[in-house]
Structure formats: structure tokens, C-alpha cells
Length: 484
Ligand code: NAD
Image 1 (tube, rainbow, N blue to C red):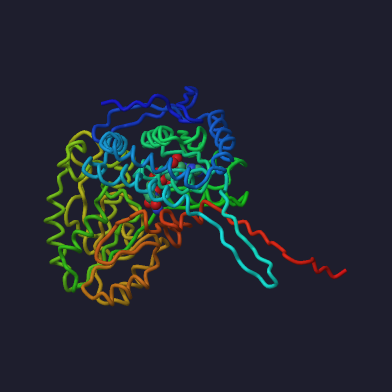
Image 2 (image 1 turned 60 degrees about the vertical axis):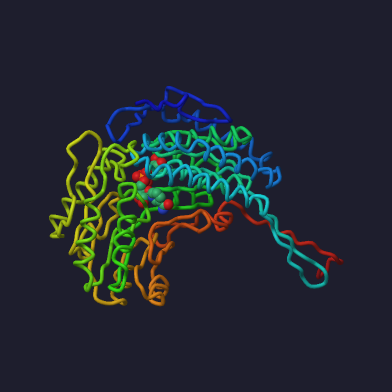
């Protein structure tokens, strides 16, 4: 199996190579084989990318929003037409089952390109009338050169979610994918250029954290949007603050899902499966603390066990497979250590827990019950297929415990009582909440966290605020009234 791109980087409208950069193996998580190799960007490559973005941005910003939007919408069409090929590539890059990548990755990227492409022509300032005929008008301006830094769980989606609003607003972007999954973003760059994007407006450079760090501190960069872990977010936010750069931080979580005893058990179990095992649990907004009201605890657990054990684990390229490997040997090791910790701390292993005896980085979908709030598996983000089920007596207790975390990315509630559903999500400290479903993230809705889970919002009209700035222009219609 090979997925070698023509070169490591995409800069100024073309593939660029510099073999003096550190060699990065791209590993297919289902087999462990090396399917491609790329080189990390050297300082010269980083400089070339930033220089091309800086040089091209002004002309792109000077085009009408409708013209910019047309390019993005064309790219969306190309992505949809090539969805199968892009999905296979995403599966090779991440190990996620093709059954998922066909519907959740390139297509979700296309949604973002289409949405922000449509919005680009509608981005305006406003007119503010003042006394005496004076007025202020505001101009919505791009920020300039933006940097996007991605995580490895949704490489194509993350590249598109950052590029779409940035480019719609007239910015240029240099995007650094995760070193674990470098392939999808290169295809996004190729397709954007095929759709008519001017050279230099969207560039991709590869590399580890140090390449990301060098992008963040470069004085040509006006804004950084990171999808990653909280510790990385803290470093990037601090580095950006030194020069007062704009940031969007899409970070980790330990989100609660609260299941009341009047909930439809099939739906709640379905929500818990979606919110813990999709993408082998490698989803930032996962509801990994499932609080189940005591009255339905055993019924919930027995149905959950049945359904989890029916997962089809196997070759991700087989469309019947619905649960694939972890992205890397390293991530598998992290998950195994958390599972050992859960057993050691006395949580009840309901199902799963073991590495599969086959090639690749497979671990079973795992459910712990009788988890308590102080256990490490209930406090730390695992970023793998490990669900903790905790029980509770009443609503106030569930809310207090759900909020007792430094994170605040997401939260969900399952109940037949809609009044209670709204009341509970109203009290949750979280950026995205779901009532009687979980983990849907359509481009039309803002997405992002509160507390340690992040700053800013992606998707929706809210993202425009994070990729543009307002200039206020005061226009006087009468004489200047100076004191002397
Ligand atoms: P990570 O923080 O290790 O790396 C994220 C990216 O940051 C990578 O591209 C990495 O190379 C880069 N990086 C690392 N150090 C850097 C530095 N000092 N300066 C600049 N860039 C640096 O995260 P990961 O392991 O790739 O992804 C998993 C994490 O991402 C989880 O915590 C998960 O919750 C989070 N995540 C959040 C969202 C969201 O939208 N909120 C989505 C997906 C993943």
C-alpha cells in the first residue's frame, strides 16, 4: 500500500521538496506499514511559505467576496466529486474506517468550503448614524497571514475548517498538519488551486511541534488557529500573546453525557456509542463521562455491552468495518496505560480492555462502570475508546459533577423531559451541547470550548469574527469644533 505525495510541502501553488528536513514516516495504522514519507520543513521552507502567503494576500483580499467565494465553492464541488479517493487517503492516513471517512471527513471539509464560500460575498461592515449628520462606517478587514495547526484525528476536515473562513475573509494561510497524518491537507491545497485559488494563499508545510512553534512566532503571522491538546494550546497561546496575535484554540475535553432514567435507552446507548467510539474514540468532544441515573443503570449497561460487542472491528478499507485501529502505536500505548489504571483503581470492566492480536494498532472498545469522580480515567482526557460510566441520584448532583472539570468543550443530556433537557444544558459549562443526541457538528453551528477547552469558535458565522477585524471610520459632515 502506498500513498506517497509528489512532495512534502505545497507552497506558492506548487509542490516543494527539501530533503534536508527530518524524515517523517507515514504509517498505515491498520498494518503498521510505511505508506509514505515526508520531510519536516526546514527554516528555509517555512520562510518560503510565509513569504509567499504574505506576498499573495493583498491581491486576494482585494478581490470581491463573491469572487473569493466562487473559488471555495468550486473546491467543495471537486472534493465531493472525488470523495471516495479522498476518503481512502484519509483512511490510510488515520486508520479510520472507510465507512466513516466517506461521510465525515472530506465531505465535512466540502461543507465548510461551501458554507464560507457562500458567506464570502455577504461580509460587510455597518453604517452607524451619529448626531448632526456625522456617521461611522465599519470596514471588515482580513487579518493578513494566518497559521493553521492541525491534530491527527480529522486531518482533511481540520484543514478545511480553518482554511474556509480564513480565505473567505481575504486572509492567506500557512497550514501545518499533524506530523502523524500529513497527507490530507496536501490534497486540500491541490484542490483549492485546481479550483482557481491564486498561488500563495493556502500553503502546507510539514513538521513536528518545532515547525509549528516557528510559524507562531514569525512576525509576518497575524493569527494562529490550533487544534490540539491543552498543553500545546497553552504554549501556542502564550507565544502568540507575546506579539498580541489573534488565536483560536480548539483543545481537548472530558465531556459529560447525562442520561436520566426517563431517557429512551436505545437512543442513550446509541449516543454513548457515537460519543465514545466513533473514530476509535479519537474525538475531542467525546462524552467520555457518561452519568447514568441509578434507576436505569443496569439496563443501560447491559444494552451498551451487547451493542459495543457487536462492533465490526477489522480492515478499515472494508466498508463493513465500523471500528478501526488507533492512529499510532504511541496513542495505543497511552490508551492501554489508562485502561490498566482504571482496573487498578477499581473500576468495573464491562467490556473490552485488550489489544487485538493482529497487525496494526487495534484495541477493543472499552467500557468501565462504577467509575467515581476521583479516578484518573474520569478526570483526564484519554483520546481513545474508553468510556467511563458513573451513576447519580438527582439532577443537581449530576450537573455539579458534570461541571467539576477544568475542561468545557461539550456536553449532552438524554431525557424524555424536554424542560429538564434545556434546563440541564443551560447549566452545563460547555461550548457545544446536545439534547437526545451526541457529537453532531454541522458547519452551520459554532463549535469550540469554554474553560481549558479553548478560545474562539470554528464554523458558522461566528468564525468570521475570528478571521477578520473591524476598522471604524468616523466621517464628520460639519465644521471641526476645537477648544482653541
Ligand atoms: P498535539 O497538541 O500533540 O498536537 C497538535 C498540533 O500541534 C500538531 O500539529 C503538533 O505538531 C503541533 N504542535 C505541538 N507542539 C507545538 C508547539 N509548541 N507550537 C506549535 N505547534 C505545536 O495534539 P494531537 O495529539 O495531535 O491531537 C490530540 C489533541 O487534540 C487532543 O487533546 C484532542 O482533544 C485535541 N483536539 C481538539 C479538537 C477541537 O476541535 N477542540 C479537535 C481534534 C482534536
